[in-house]
Length: 166
Image (tube, rainbow, N blue to C red; front, side, top):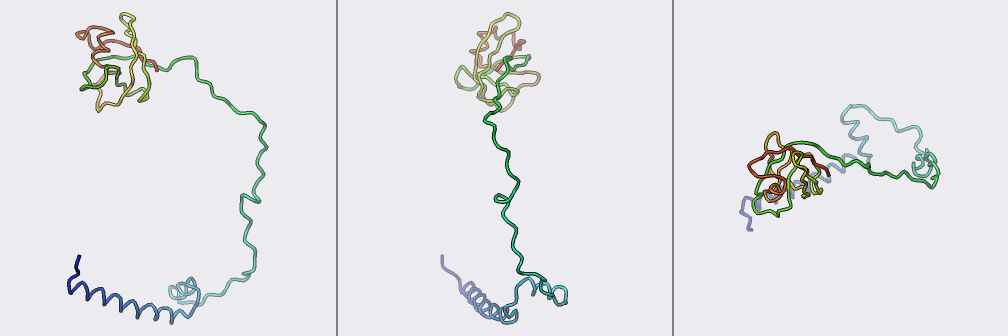
């Protein structure tokens, strides 16, 4: 990329201005701490130095903090409940546009979980993997792949009442 003549002049002007301004600012501050210079300029008053500048800084918290409670050698262990988590609702079907035949979509269940779907009318059940789908029809709890739905009921019976466990 080549610079135009006006761009070269602007860069030269900014460089020269910087070379002049920086020494002038340093000369007029005369090595004073920047906080005092800013305070004097802003308020127009002289700032007195702090009374004690020889005090020790506080010790770090991790060295002088509250002593931790000694461990007892036991830990709380969480056990899953014996009851499966699940819901009852209506199921319908979709072709899922070429997805594997073992997929289903239930927005209320965790994605990636294996769901067990039981038809409440005839007692048949199937298992499927919960995947994300752009949208689910209203009043439907789960959308099954059409091949899985046929194992539960005929396609003409959709939607059917089901129990979903994961």
